[in-house]
Image (cartoon, rainbow, N blue to C red; front, side):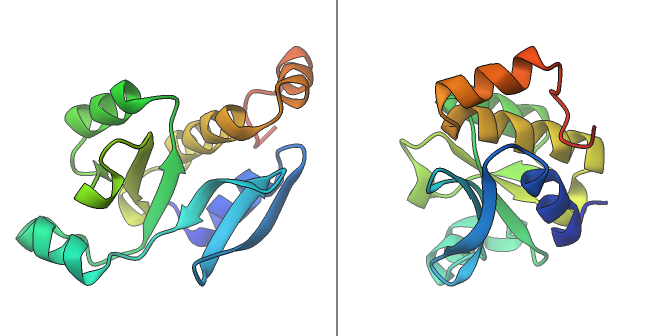
Length: 134
């Protein structure tokens, strides 16, 4: 399954992406806008999730809208989740040790596309590079 090294490699392969921090954790940004980041569960998250709380690494991922977020969670709750902290936000949490690398690549690319400046995203897509692994 995926690792932080995979997240780093995939994110930094995208134009303008840089690695930084957000609230003390790793974050990958484009033009100062985070698109994926390390998101350890907080006490309130664990209390809300109860026995369903993952004990492995959790990645925060920006998605296009809340419909996408809810569809991902409904389609694969073993991989995707949310907490009340993200109610009203187009962000999904990903159990990093449960997602495969090709799916992670798609998530990272789509997240980058939501935050990248339009011209940069269009240039990237026009070049035919939709997979950061290429």
